[in-house]
Length: 105
Image (tube, rainbow, N blue to C red):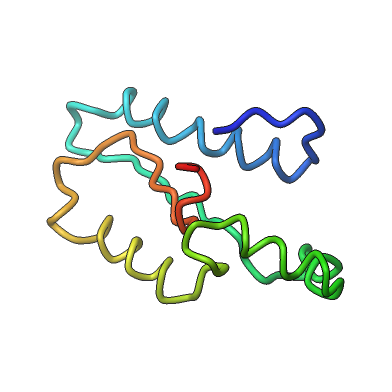
């Protein structure tokens, strides 16, 4: 996660949740239980309504995301299907960012 000087309560909550997956994954490894998490990026919710209502801010946010857009429902669904499938049987203690490349900038 990137360090941000002025983090809101929601950002701190997300960071703490993202730290739980690796900790639980280490605790449960060897018991045939994999613990992983999905870290969704920009999402249109009630919490982001004020940002989306401001035309200047609404245009700059997707401009900072390498994919050029906020996530769609299918983006998160495919990540969920991956973790639910046998393809992820050997994946443990991982947080998968579904953020259009935001964290990789």
